[in-house]
Length: 125
Image 1 (tube, rainbow, N blue to C red):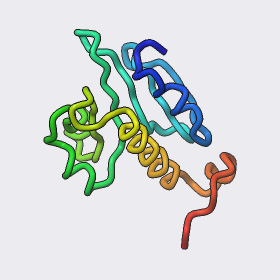
Image 2 (cartoon, helix red, strand yellow; image 1 turned 120 degrees about the horizontal axis):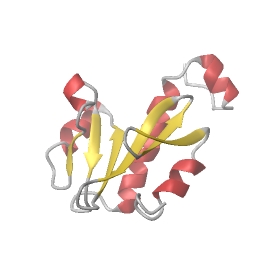
Image 3 (tube, one colour; image 1 turned 60 degrees about the vertical axis):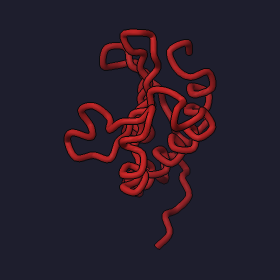
């Protein structure tokens, strides 16, 4: 995929139960169980932006760092989603780690039935 960082598409698709659709004006949207865990879009200057769900701690730590910002629309609605727009703060391996964590958080929020259908490991009790 030429719109995403070189390894992001195959990485996202390697995560358990991941699906990919193009929506919202050409954004690459990655979902698990029908719920979004990452969005990649090319901006007006061909700059790549990747949006992902973050823990409250990560959101607070990263939201004002160079190359990061609260995700437009999502963060303004009170969600802890961040948007990465260059490598000043996160290089690609670090970005993949945050996308992996986003996938895990979204997976954990799925119903037990959906988790079983995806053959996800059980949640700790």
